[in-house]
Length: 214
Ligand SMILES: N[C@@H](CCC(=O)N[C@@H](CS)C(=O)NCC(=O)O)C(=O)O
Image (cartoon, rainbow, N blue to C red):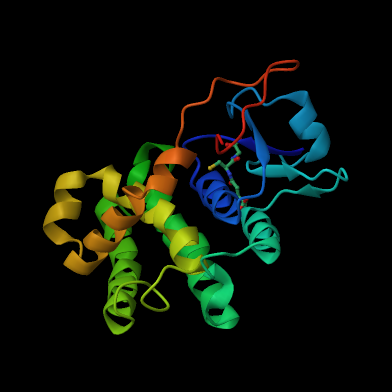
């Protein structure tokens, strides 16, 4: 069966798990820890990032967006691939590039000593993107590219969740209300709850639970 190396709290792994869960494809999970990655995972993908998907024919997908596209290309019951691909790619690129850059420095200022900017500067930079997202949500009546979630929403919300969790009081007081509602909808969804199941750490020979139990 298809195997997914994953780390529960990684936002890239979250979006891959969301797409795999939505597709309904059967996937077995190898939950890892980042500071002690299994040799099998590094043999499959030497760059050492999660998620990594090993297909039944042995081919490897080690980029979260590739995993999402692969899963949804096979089965996309909620039509997450229905939005304009160029617009979707642009939004995700802004998220994975400048927003993620700002998020890391807002969330972990200690890991970026010597930066001429402070955490509040990065928070402001992140907020600009979040205001753009909120404007889209308003224009599209609920989600980023339309009234129903599509790939961009699922690819981006795990990162907005991290931003929100960095300083919840700030988030509640300052994040656009529409964006707060959007985020709450995603993080309280039944599917997100399922893909956040706490699996025991996988080690060679250990059981590989199904991502979504039948
Ligand atoms: N571009 C990759 C990024 C994945 C990534 O950076 N994942 C982080 C965890 S959130 C990771 O595995 N980092 C390696 C490490 O911390 O050792 C993707 O989209 O899959």
